[in-house]
Amino acid sequence: MFKKNIFALALATLFGSSSVCAVENVDLLIKNATVLTMNDEKTIFQHGLVAIDGNHIVAVSDGSNLSQYSADKTIDADGDIVMPGLINSHTHVSMTVFRSLADDVPDRLHRYIFPLEKKMVSRDMVRIGAQLGNVEMVKGGVTTYGDMYYFEDEVAKTVDKIGMRAVLGETVIKFPVADAANADEGIQYAVDFIKQWKGHPRITPAFAPHAPYTNTTNALKKVTQLSEKYDVPVLIHLAESHRENEVIAKRSHGKTPVGYMEEIGALTPRLVGAHMINVNDEDITLLKKRGVGIAHNMSANIKSAKGVSPALKMFDNGLRIGLGTDGPMSGNTLSTIDEFNQVAKVHKLVNKDRGAMPPIKVIEMATMGAARALHMEDKIGSLEVGKLADVIIVDTKSPNMTPVYNPYSALVYSAYASNVKHTIVDGRILMKDRKMLTVDEASIRDEALAFAAKVRKTVIDSGEVVR
Image (tube, rainbow, N blue to C red; front, top):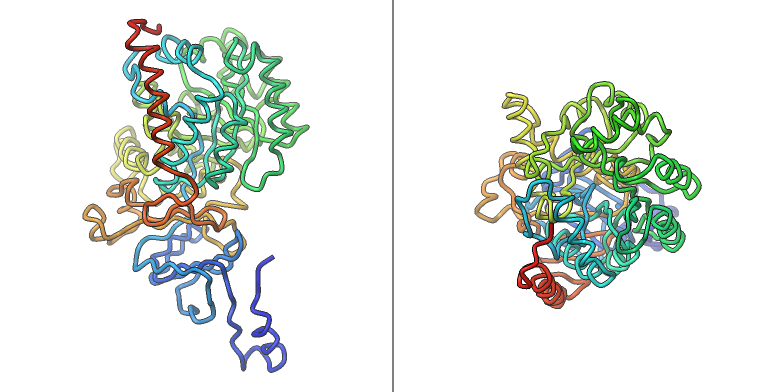
């Protein structure tokens, strides 16, 4: 799989490995780094190195074996933090073009967002919004994300172009939307999308039933069956709101949304549930038993006043839980780093315990935890030999990051998304020294602003208020 220095290996074979030290040529070498591996032992290497060949990590060490490697490209981290790429386990990336609209409208999803989407969502909107969101995430150190929206084939094209990794769910919902007249059409659209993109090295297509209460039992069962047939994930909003609780309780003779999903056979290891705010101990037991992934979206949840998920309890009980941002109309940014501070502090507050949710747990939820939530922990989430080379380098020289006594604390309580210097996905440098290398950031921003002018004209300047 990986390139070798044939001459050096031949010498080692001829004279014995103890007499000749083989020099291995790799594509990319990161040296002089504070390496947060996020492996099971949470190993940290001061002055460490990470060697990448092709799209895999071939070495992670304390740097004492630096002379064993030659590289086509070398990054001298100069003490900066090198860590796994961040994983945003739940968002709606294309909604960047709607950011800052009606932020404080009560019952916003039903009164504002659904009507707005009916007027404005199109293939063009999805592409433009996804391009902008992708750049925001790469510049904030997000290398993989889980997404739910319409026209996900357009999102896939943007992910492919920029070079990110993503699990992309095509929305299934019971009422007419931009790309389907009903749930059956949405399911067929999803099947076609899955057939088109399955097998891509960085893109995992998926089904995305919006929520239990916005789909029928038959539709949810059908999606579950088809996810088994096509061997793909299912992304869903679950246990998020009181409205959902009421609808599902009436439908299922008093069951919780999690209990209802279990009853209909939809609570499977393929499922990734976003929010999980209204869950009880019985629900948590079921979620762990079924291996369900969970996306914890602190900023969006507290902004909407829906409550605080018992995420710490779920994490401590070994559930597959990772951080997400929700869409940029909900949490407003797509920066996982911006979630760190709130996740740590709000869980301390609700638990009335300063020691609750320490920084190391937050960073695990943003890396290996989110990888587990997306059922990708064997491929990403930590810096270990054999894993895919998704790596970020975080500046420790800026005023807000000086000094660093504890790298986990510095990341959680001090870091900004703008402290990310370099972003690497699949062994490819997507951003170097804050400059995007695979897409034209300026033209993407300009196109988003042009679309925003259309939104302004349709929604604001026309005097029409979307309700």
